[in-house]
Length: 250
Image (cartoon, rainbow, N blue to C red; front, side):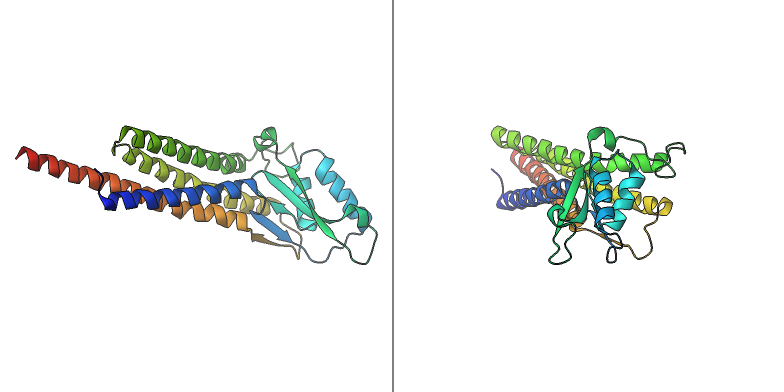
């Protein structure tokens, strides 16, 4: 028999865990982690078209796509890089110019590609810090989601077995998932800061954090609160069960 307090804690923890999972999943799948705002474009239509073609169809190069995002109001995510360009059908029209977003995904080999101390110069030394920060920023959220999924399976098994003991494991898994979510945000911010040190944006280009990053950041306290509820319920139930057992024996 489960006390109402523990059942309430489990329900609230499950809801918080679900919200955190949704927020983190949306954050991973969108590109608005970091965005650049440049002054009115100084490039004419032909230059913007060339930048767009190089960005979408050119070879993968950190320096190239970073410079393009600087000049074309780009946005950067964990798996996407995007630019804002005039609609192809309206390249040379001065009136009613419409803008559209063009995005390119990072392939798995590109995610594991090394980062260099001087972006764009493949003859320079590899920057191990930036390389591993980049790899951690896309691996950690996947680990976080996997831990939450595993905790869900453990919770389902606990319900089927009518046992409260696995709740402690569910809480620990959520605690680890929350740390992974926080690590994702920290690695991303540190990587962007290091990139700007080696390849600073042009004068007048401003960078800002996007809503995708804030979603990932919000998922951290949600997972930690869920972990706290699960751990409290498991610990309190165990103490109560021990006392009841001792009372019956006495």
